[in-house]
Length: 399
Image (cartoon, rainbow, N blue to C red; front, side):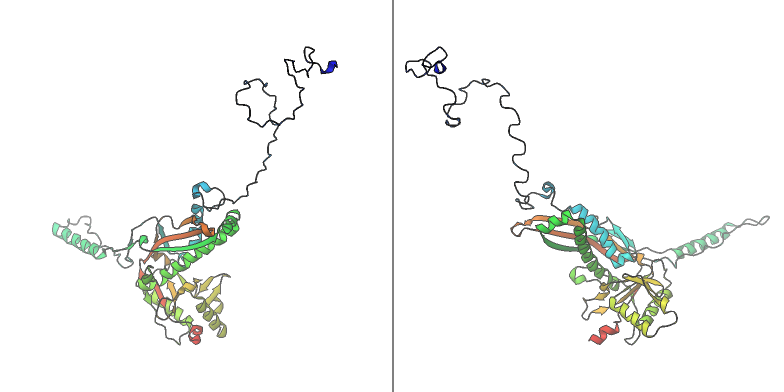
């Protein structure tokens, strides 16, 4: 027997009587016995020295990041506050839309007074230009003259009291109740577009502009001519503003001059004067001046290169909201005020609110975005406002 094949004590490894029953290591391939066949605990803990299997044998990153494609879980499955990236921020959108709303409204651009944060606001409704009075000269005694008696003093006091009473006026109030008029615009977007909007601020800004312009356009229609039947506030035409008569054959430049004369004769202050013109009105004005140019045509109507300029020396804003489509027969009006700050707009705080609902239409993978503003409108001094119902000639010819 070869010594190389002997056991530890010189025994024959193939001898059936050998007590060792020694089998050379490696004769049975590793893995032949399934893992777990030997009960747990048969090998005492610690038999294999700690560290025999060096840490890091399985390289970090064996499961590459991103094996589960992003978007496997539809947007909106989790509530907004837990969703993280890929969702719109309602507070950011509300603040941006509120700013764009003010920039897009023709009434606000001309200087209307905006009051935010009050659900019920009293507005003083009386002009005090004609109630101030000088008081009588006080009764004074000259040097060396006798002091006035009580009767004379009493008479002078009564005269002062009468003059003060005549200068008094009772102040009435109009009330703004923004909660009574809620204006809303709602859009539905695919979640793929929402993801693009989150990643691209320029795309998001375009959507915000569209929402703000939609709100401002509808709000201006309510501020100018109102639509109580459709829950809009009473506008300028329904708040006591003076209409300016205009014959059908009168040119628009003469109509504009008559409107200015009417306001001036009412002794109204010119603090924030301005016009709101329809595009068709501006078109007819420019064509009329081009056909019959007066010597000062360059000063009567000017342009700022956008949607404004000056008419008869006062600024104007061009807006399609000057057309009242709610009337039985649509009317294109010209609006003028000597002080647009006498137009009061009351809004609840915040000026605009935005709701994002990503889990409303999960079956179609869509997100609903809604912008809401609550406001009311009134005129503190209606006599500062005048409007004309005369239609431009081009609109009359189309009929």
